[in-house]
Length: 118
Image 1 (cartoon, helix red, strand yellow):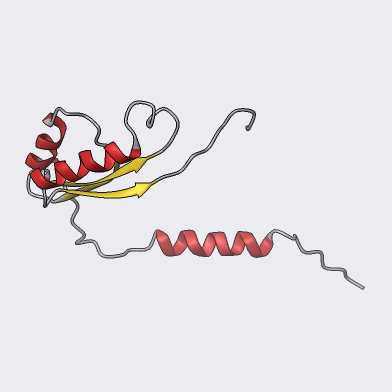
Image 2 (cartoon, one colour):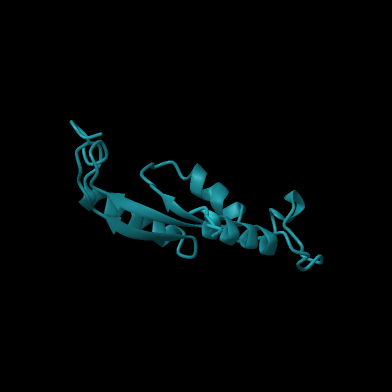
């Protein structure tokens, strides 16, 4: 009687090999990618910023570079000590009046403590 032993990792190895083969195939060779020359032409979106400064230099540059931004209002430790959630919301609403097509905001009020947690 011949006993056939099978490696318990064979199915996973087979799936991995099939996946790698499919990914390395000869897909569309006419794919185009962005280059540095496209930077000024391509609209962009930064999905996580915190706008708290009275100085508009950063947002002016974002507008020039065709960025839209999503600013978060945060109640995280360190932030609310310098600007309350209420003040942050009014500040960002004032900025939206100046840049209505570039700035969006979301309240992300949360509080956590990392003391003693690893």
